[in-house]
Length: 369
Image (cartoon, rainbow, N blue to C red; front, side, top):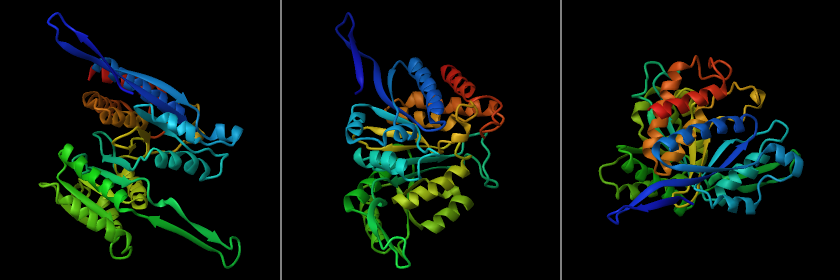
């Protein structure tokens, strides 16, 4: 819950003092707690300068807890997250836990239960960061992907027959509802309108997935009528990946389904400099939202003070922007750009300094921004 103090001056005029934001921290696995600690360091510096406060509460949801208790996250614990203004997540993924258990048991369960129906992924090449795309720079690589986050193939509908036999059958169904599709599309257009974006592109596969993307396409053009001045475009997902590499400047806002969004955002991350700088948000516009670096838990680097914390710091920057602290968010982005100019590389162990040193440097630059 956001708390704001109010004072009254000698003239009887009310003045709102700094707000207090309550943030839930889920460090998670591997290097997750390390990068979250640096993100906290940076947002504290931004809050101190901007005049707002933040309180933090840490939760141990992750692989180590699961190994000890067999519990990922309970329904009651998810309900407890609703009382916070935002959630900052480090990483989920443990080498001693089979793939899928933590991802489904924590990430997907939390997304579905909190109705985090938008996955927001800025693909923005910052100055000083190398991209594998020839002759492309920050002017060309600056768009966002709005991915539907609670339906599609990730909804878990389907099953297996005769498992382990020569006649085995596996069915995984893509669930697309009018409500789910339309609210995701509407968020994309709202985002474009609020952020001065000129075009929204629907990424799909209407020529093959004729049932699901007929719904997406109809909803897309019906919603678009309400947003005068914003151009619309459509691209098959395979063409989208091609243009993301060849002509990324063609994109402004891309809206797409869960599976396609999952795939193209990893490609986008590589074009903006890699997982060390990419961040995203799981958004419920009317409830608590969760922000996280895109990269994994990198367990081999745990405790070595070599992992790059910039993606987690950028996730925290997105969190502040979402909470309405836009000036503080701008300070953090500028501080990250300045920090990049002082680093040897964005790669773990090659930064020319440690994880903690990078976080402290960004925090220092925030104070000076």
